[in-house]
Image: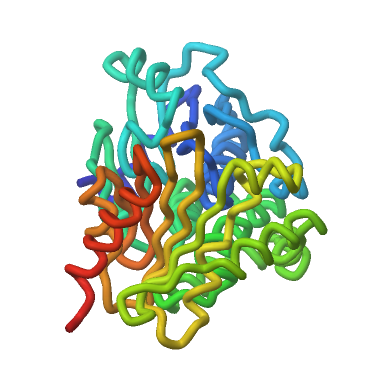
Length: 321
């Protein structure tokens, strides 16, 4: 694996870059990509951010989100992947990445323990958010962060750290947050827009899902189900489910919280959270997914009850007896 300084020195030599983020982007993915793109722009590098899908509306509280494209629009010298544990996480953008990767400088900057080191240059360091890695990278590149860089970084840190409440938050997290705040990030405004603000329809969905939580394994496992029918009834999109998985961890007896969202008939996206007794990265890996020890995800296919039983068994095998 490369050092962050090696990555910084490499990026100081490039003239153009495309930055890829993972499918169904969260604040850390978008924040990492946009902060790095802004830093490269300030160095005179032609740059754009690529994501396969629709950017969640709440991120548009910061400028520049409308510049994100679904496929590269020019032949860049470097392809950079941020907050993506493997190529498959790029979704449909994986094809564009793979088609040009052999002829380009490829860089992977991530914080997931399940990262496969799929680029020519790789820096993977587990942190509460990947934006912490990007904050240090920007400094090592010799770029003076402006308020926009600071705001992008703060958005990512707030999102992935649960507003600085998760157990993997440490002194490095707050040092990176201080760097972003000193650059001009408005912590209160970003926290409200990204972490707290919601529509009436979303609050009604949240209440419906939480009221039907399923408890199992002596109440140590709690599972929320969000169906396509629920989303349609409330006029919402899939990004409205962000954060639902975190609620059950506030229940004192729950060790593992899961949100299973119906992507389409016979396909469910599972998000896992753990208080620490269970490594949910291992659980997700059983089903081809991954992420972090305390937060991971995967896909299930087929009947929901069958998928639930498989998930429940995988969790049960890792719960302390």
